Amino acid sequence: MKLLKVLMAVASAGVMPQAGAQTRPAVPGYTYGQATLAKAPFTLADVAAIKKTLLFSDDDERALRQSQPILADQTEAILDVWYGFVASTPELVIFFGDRKTGAPDGAYLGAVRKRFALWISDTAEARFDQRWLDWQYELGLRHNKLKKNLTDQADSAPQVNFRYLSALTIPVTTTLKPFLAKKGASAADVEKMHAAWVKAVLLQTILWSYPYVKEGEF
Image (cartoon, rainbow, N blue to C red):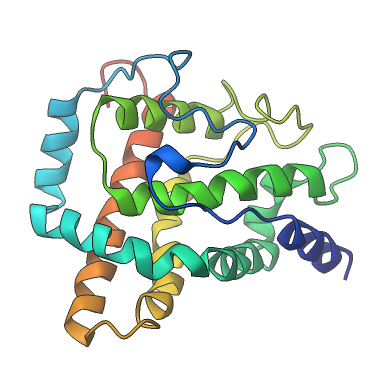
């Protein structure tokens, strides 16, 4: 019951993403494109090779962009589903818990949720340039013990365990599919958008794994 109250408070503080990269709301910790970000140690050529392995095509990029206006005004509902999944999964909610008490940290959950909303739109925009690459590296660091908790000054679990990064592709994209179908897109287009989202989320979690891998082995 306490966890549900925390999540409801977090939901009420949610921020809806705005369309277009130039109209992003100011969200603490959202530093996509800022000069302060370190340059990613993986290259655009590396990403192109991963995309080729994932069968990630130009058609997938178009399908992602098609999904953006469909998802834009459903963001909070999507986050409610995702946060509900985390809340019901002890193996995951621990990464948002206070290290001393074990209770979910509402402030931490709320801060992450605001950036999570923007991540949905960023993924749908399908911008695979150097700015995007550097942001993926930063997100990987924020899941790893190197930078987890620093952005929000949280006293939580020291890192998200490696095994959950790519595993989360399935619950995230499976629960997203019904939202893709809510705005009248054809069944074929829904399938294309969903497939593109699976590839895009898996691509990102692969990149986020970089800090967990020994040098030279990525």
